[in-house]
Length: 135
Image (cartoon, rainbow, N blue to C red; front, side, top):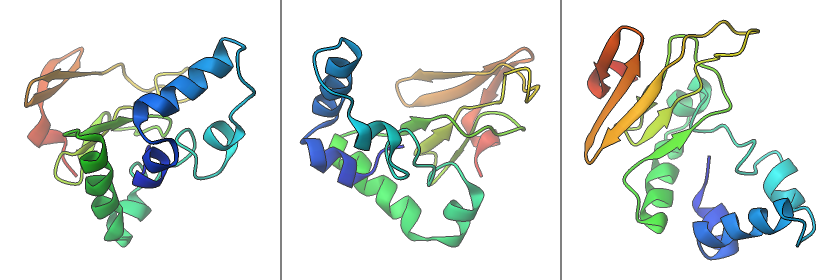
């Protein structure tokens, strides 16, 4: 997940993406802070873990701040499996879509469908409205 600190450090999400892209193409050194630091966009899990969302009121506040900086309506995060499927929190502003589909976790495949303001979870049973997946 991203925080407003991540976005401010690079000036924009586009600049952060360009930095990682340069590394992937072999044109820049590895951006260790982005990829390896505990609070990096790759490893930061504040929006995905229940302890953070329900014990720290500042987590949803930081999410709203980050979305405002990026002029975005919602954030989609992965890398933290949720055994009961894709779900949302913070007033449907963060979607956690890691369903643990690998063999190790035995999760079920699900897809997040976003059409304008409508968000649904698609799975083998059909479509599930966002309101039914809100925590």
